[in-house]
Length: 381
Length: 79
Ligand SMILES: Cc1cc2nc3c(=O)[nH]c(=O)nc-3n(C[C@H](O)[C@H](O)[C@H](O)COP(=O)(O)OP(=O)(O)OC[C@H]3O[C@@H](n4cnc5c(N)ncnc54)[C@H](O)[C@@H]3O)c2cc1C
Image (cartoon, rainbow over all chains, first blue to last red; front, top):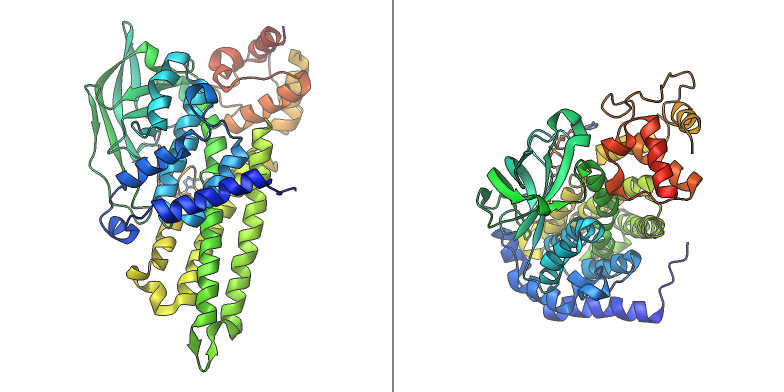
């Protein structure tokens, strides 16, 4: 596979790394400790144009191909130590914008996309419920037609940006007896009466992105807020997942590179028994494995992304990438902690945060177990 | 793509059971004969074989519940 980026693309990559290092100065450790969203950094990202990378030029965006956006998000993961911020941006690029750009009508695009680009509007992708999770289509939220409106009732859980989203893409059953074929999708503004966002729920990692619940109680939305067609919710969700699954993990490649470089520098510098610890085979092999995971994860990611952008829904590739990137970063972060010894375990040093941040990707967008089920099914088992 | 070709693909490639009986008007979705993964495979096959693009929002009960409705749908987008 040809991963040769041209000079212009490499300049863009370098520009993102420089932006992260120079303009994103927030204290990630402190925000992580308080589960606080870095609002100013978000605005800086919007001003830098991150939220417009995927958006067509007529809506004010750059219209970059998905592979280039992945490359730039890799740069973000490398340059920015705030993995929660990278994840939060990814949810907008792949979860929310994919839905809007693919299924939104002109009015819906105009209403939400320019505001997202400016950093004024944040969207949530609200599918998960206590009753569903891995069994995604077992949702119980209903949308009952009432004149020209729909009345939404139910509760969405574990939703990224639930506490501070301006709008949510809500999946609800318009025909409860039709299983997954009775699900429809709605764009619901957070200030709609009957829409209540919870306070942030505390998470293990990725703590600079907010998570929570959305309660819908007789939440009345006009039928014009439906995204796509009635009953197309499952297909819309599947389409979004096919993009989000692999692409939201693009910053993982950059994070692996960052952890490799940090570990390498530490292994060269730290002396024990009169020699740098990197001279001990146990440390050297850990670092060799970090390099191996980085390079193979990168190949798998871009192979999947390029097939996907060429129009073939690459279910196998998305599932393989989702498992591989999430598990590679988890192992690399664990190795980074081990290489740094006690320093790696100290919260202040910021290494352990990467391990906590890495675990989330083995769960969101379909757990690694569910991805293995998909691969097995595709192999005919 | 006609009903027979659709039936054969579903029997052999998706269900792995060439003798599985599927009538033209038999429900495939609510009965869960096809799950979401199977539907995605079927769509990819139709797109390749018929050189058409099926937008995800068209994948609904109305268009994909039976072999006959799928045949009608393919006819409508192929024109
Ligand atoms: C950081 C983070 C962000 C998230 N953001 C969002 C969001 O923005 N929007 C949203 O809608 N949701 C979001 N989620 C929710 C996420 O999609 C679910 O947590 C996920 O799908 C798993 O569902 P669950 O938590 O109910 O686990 P469960 O489905 O209860 O699974 C529990 C365990 O059982 C295993 N399991 C379940 N079923 C099977 C099976 N068939 N085969 C094998 N193993 C199985 C799972 O792998 C897991 O180990 C987020 C989650 C996290 C962690």
